[in-house]
Amino acid sequence: MPDRTPVELRPAGASRSPSPSGAVILMLEGVPREDGVHHRMRGISDGYAGGTDDTVTRVLAHALPPLLIAIGIVFQWLTPPELTGTPFFVAAPLVAAPLFARWVPAFFGAVGIVAATLLHAVAGRVTEAAVAHDLATELATIAFATALAVLINGVVARTRGQLATARGVAEAAQRAVLPTPPARIDGLRLAARYDAAQTDTLVGGDLYGALATSYGVRLIVGDVRGKGLGAIEAVSVILGAFWEAADGEPSLSDVANRLENALVREGTRRQDMDTSEGFATCVLVEIPPGHDRVRVLNRGHPEPLLLGAAGTVTALHPGDFSLPLGLADLGAHAAPPDEWPFPPASTLLLYTDGLSESRDASGVFYGPAGSLEGRSFTSPDRLLAALVADVHRHANGERGDDMALLAVTRPPGRTGRKDTLQP
Image (cartoon, rainbow, N blue to C red; front, side):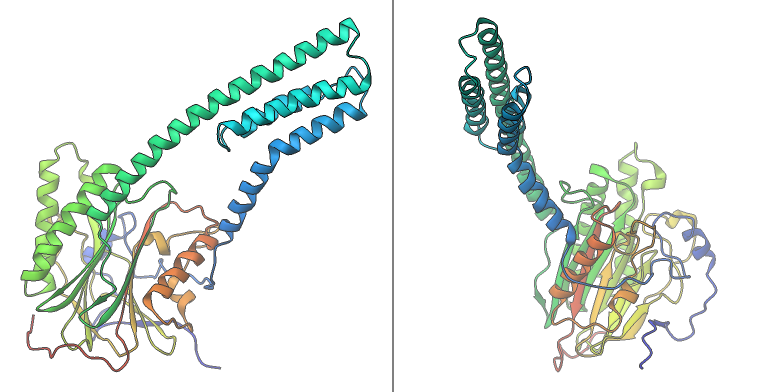
């Protein structure tokens, strides 16, 4: 049986002992450690069980109002006369209020009134004065609950309209801050996914980007420390600096310096920002013309994975650790980029720690390297779809952090432009 153990590949001359800067990184939240904390075994599979659960819940919720009417009829028919099904007739329109159009709770209220009247008539007790008084009280109660349900339905409808408007604005902001990379760039195939931990949250502190330049295809995946609007603003600053620097700077180190300066300027401008939140981990990647190599500059980020055509998985550990962006004042040196072969039909996977730090109910981390070992995918889109589905199932839909994914595949038998520039 072939050995399926994930490969840990290091550049020539790299040391296993963490550098002084690595010791600092270990104290920072979400920063990778050399002992492979971001990788634990978990099988990959397609689909997300939570979607089925949501569908069943919706069906049951929509079936509840008519079920309440039926229970009320049966209850009043089979129980002694002093017991009635009015509580069930009252509950039906109230349950229907947030689930259906406005006429539906009114309909269930009318059905409840008719059912209560007919049940008393069938019992032959409507002509009795005391019973007639009780019936009037029951009908008034059902009518009041129905009017209240219609009012609640209107409030819910207006709230949903406001949320839909806000969501549309958020989607527009997401497209502006975090545009989707092209499916093909300089002969390479790309796919990107942003999966928010919160269902109604579209964009947070994770980021990705891709750009074809004269130095080759340049990529970035990063994670800004912090949450909320401040993190989104930092994302826009980093990506704005990346678009400009990636096209003009001759090396990844120069690009990283530009990003560092932009983030420091942002921290200086925002005087109210906590200094502990003014940094971002990131991976910068350069695939030179020819596409036979990949250069990686890791600034305190989870290491990329190189997926071979035969199902092998190689973790691209940095030869030396560097501090995240925004922490240059600590004085640690910045490591140079590392370089690895990029064979045809292989795929480079970049991700944020929302992927590798997702836990199941027992606290076990999701391990992308072990999960992908021995598998192959026909496109980067299928790879990312499988990862997202499996992480959702692993964490049962309850993740604590967003995740950004970027995959780039070198098609088999395809080469890019000849590498004439030496960064």
